Image 1 (cartoon, rainbow, N blue to C red):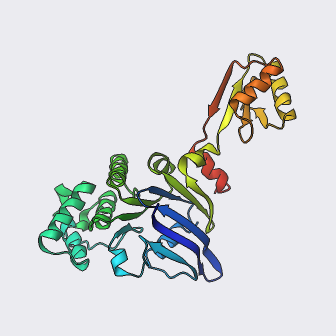
Image 2: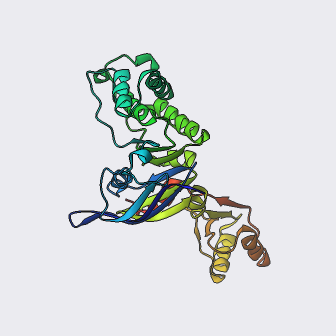
Image 3: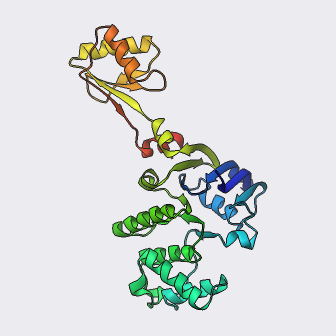
Length: 305
């Protein structure tokens, strides 16, 4: 599959501190790619490097097969990085017209692009209001509209739901889904884990400037799977824990429940574990695979930061 973003050996220091430390990243075209990390992990620095706003100390960046310093390449990319500087004395429509003109759009083409962007973010009704009177959430919507003006093939969004009320968050999630449905690639940097779990095909996790995970979202979640086993008596639970540990399978009491066990699934699967228990005359009252939340997987990967 063609790459919308390809990063190799990317390094960027601020003084002696490595903000981005040897990142390799491949974002398939047409995917919704989640970029996660705690505050200060290097997410926004990476995005600035992607867009040519910063130059790397080492490494290469390719966007849509081209260089981020190539105007023709950047014309295929729309981005929201933090919040762009908007003119408070101009209306929402006038702000978009200014940026459309700077981007080479004019006349009917510009008006069509502006109408489409305002419609996508739900600001048609306030298009002629001055941006200086907008709420934080409305300014965020207008910023996203700027990223969509040229109908980009690749959309890079840095914390797009910041400042939005619950209805606005739902709208932005629906917008990202629609962008993906139309064949665009979305690179979504966020700390809102439910967004990634609901929207993203793939995910990368950044910690202190280094990637600590990169792959399919479902595979990342499968890393945190475990087996919940419950017995009728505490005596059966104790015997089962001993039998599983003797077989090299991790097992521990499930919270405060005296009859429940939490069993790791990095070796034999549920059917093999059930068979092992049956051979020892142990018959669970309940046996079920539990999936960890993305939050718990994220905290494990980032040492709880």
